[in-house]
Image 1 (cartoon, rainbow, N blue to C red):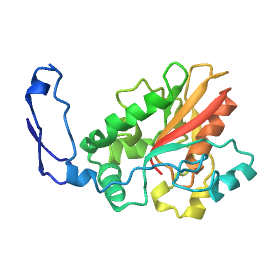
Image 2 (image 1 turned 90 degrees about the horizontal axis):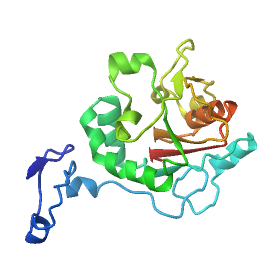
Image 3 (image 1 turned 30 degrees about the vertical axis):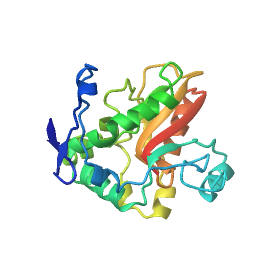
Amino acid sequence: MNTKCKLCQQMINYKINLAWIFSFKPIKEKFICKDCYQKFEFIQLPICEGCGRKSNDKTCLDCVKWEKKQKKLLKNRALLVYQNQATKEYFNLYKFIGDYQLRKIFQNKFEKMIMQNYPLKHWIYVPIPVNKSTQEHERMFNQVVGLIENLPYVELLAVDENLHQIKQVEKNRIDRIHTPQPFKFNGKIDLKGKNILLVDDVYTTGTTLYHAQQIMFEHGAKKVHSITLAR
């Protein structure tokens, strides 16, 4: 079985031996070649316990600032280091150019990370939404939902379309930090005593996720943590 890497279009060769043949296991499809995969940097310990970034400090300066704002830290966890050229190029192709097939590259690994660390029987998975204009006229899909499409997520948030929205990518760091609440509750379930796992593609300043956390707490959630593909 030969397929092409979704990043460089190089052919991916599958090594098939007798042990695999007699195991009767299905072939696990690959979406990225070894050369491209090795260009990504995966987050390893030690990390900041608040945002999940690589850090020797238990709580980084950014998270200390959130605590001073009386926020309960999200205890975010992430798979990839965002300040990595391969990661930035991946998001440019997937998120901004809109190549939906690229969701497959890290989808399986990301979904496994979620299920192993946040068992479904204890957590409700809530993806961060995108506004209607982006989903209907530009990208045509929610990039976060694409990463977890095989999990039983619940869309409890919606973008408040009554607000004048400036895209996060068009804002500098200061503008992002001071972004007003962009979300509204979109659920029909009682969150009292529930544990919510917010899912997003990238954690940058944390503002988006803390806005989402606020909505969840206002509707009775017990715990609100987050996980992102990159930090």
